[in-house]
Amino acid sequence: QVQLVESGGGLVQPGGSLRLACAASGSILTFYSLGWYRQAPGKQRELVARITTGGTTAYVDSEKDRFTISRDIAKNTVYLQMNNLKPEDTAVYYCNANSISGVIWGQGTQVTVSS
Image (cartoon, rainbow, N blue to C red; front, side):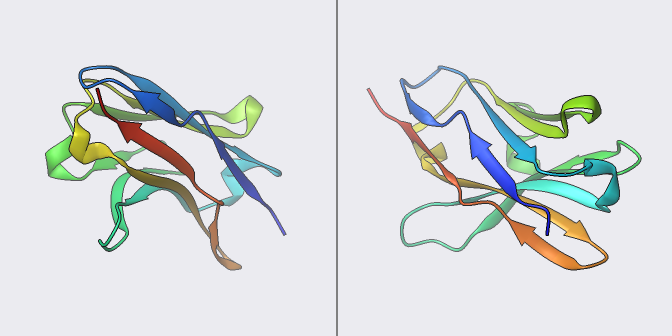
């Protein structure tokens, strides 16, 4: 089964930027879509951004001006560029893939926005 491994999280000051990466162990073109979710302490996991096999992107309304999802097909990797980060962006960020076999999740990467 294809596995997803996230990286790029860390501690950043408010207003800073981070780029998260989600590397798949197989071709990302086999997935209907790949997405980034986040889960803050005490809150439900929520969708942040998604990209389809055809390259169509979608964002949660509150983040579409600060976050950008992209992919590198040759590297089987999906990215989430996050700019102007705010303390409320603090969460564990998870990569998600939808395939004919079902839903696959990565292990998550912690993003902490704090001064």
